[in-house]
Length: 120
Image 1 (tube, helix red, strand yellow):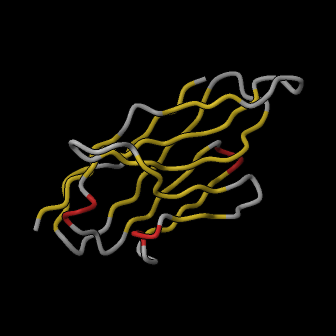
Image 2 (cartoon, rainbow, N blue to C red; image 1 turned 90 degrees about the horizontal axis):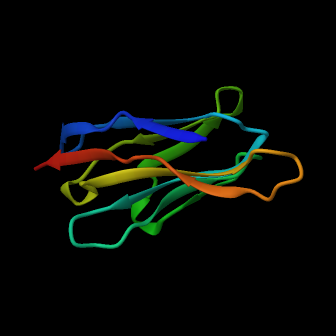
Image 3 (cartoon, helix red, strand yellow; image 1 turned 120 degrees about the vertical axis):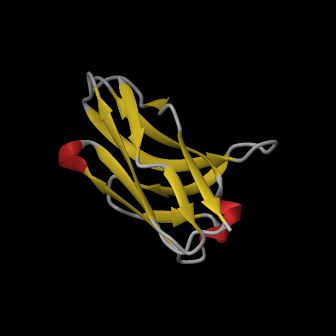
């Protein structure tokens, strides 16, 4: 199983980016999916998660600026980021709990990370 993230880049403050992360490989089902971020010198932390039933949870700092969504048919999770601030600069990682067989418990998988840089 692999998670491939894309969509990062350089944007000015107030701009928008849309991150995508597609899971591929031997997948039976995907439970929760999410996005985390890690800024230089800081620990990786939660941005947003979404369950298989489309229930979303956001970190407080999102403040309505980001929207997480998923396309189960494509095994893909998205993060629409609006009103970006320089403080949002970080490497963004996608995460998913994936079952590779019906009788196996979900395993935690991570994408490779995509850099988001917001200039002031």
